[in-house]
Image (cartoon, rainbow, N blue to C red; front, side, top):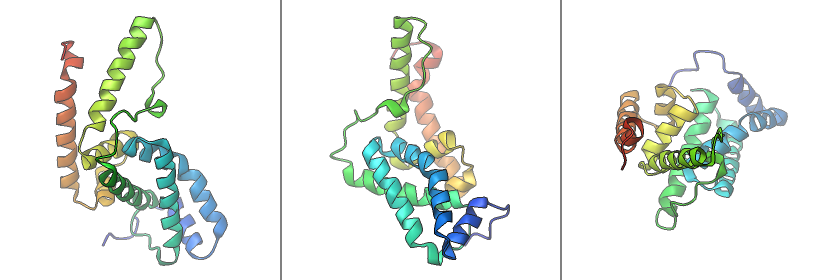
Length: 192
């Protein structure tokens, strides 16, 4: 078991208040983390309605377990652990039915639109990066999304994935090596 949180986490304080019956604090946690959680889940499952349903399920599970809550890690680590498990289960269950074409506007990054041709090249490259990330095995994709997009530390990712930090580093190394190999032509200017 992890020892108590080393630095004060205001979210842990809020969750302890929820445990003690303060319903308003749960609303504060929901408002504070809903968008980042939906965004993370969307990047995992690549389906907006599903990501919103999964986020609701995460908060429902948090609320249902309020009475037994113990602050053994950061609140967000606990929340992302629940979210990752739900997303991985959904992906496993949907693997055969899922289409690789389910990437939409939330993955979009603002382009500079200097010209139509440059915008098309940019969009094609961006889609290729998205496809490369989406093609990673589920746990590797989860680790990359938490590391790069949620800016979580190895220790937090390890808690979420319920593995050691060295296993997370190895997982990320393999994921980044796969991405590096698949996208090398973008750096060297070659073609696929």
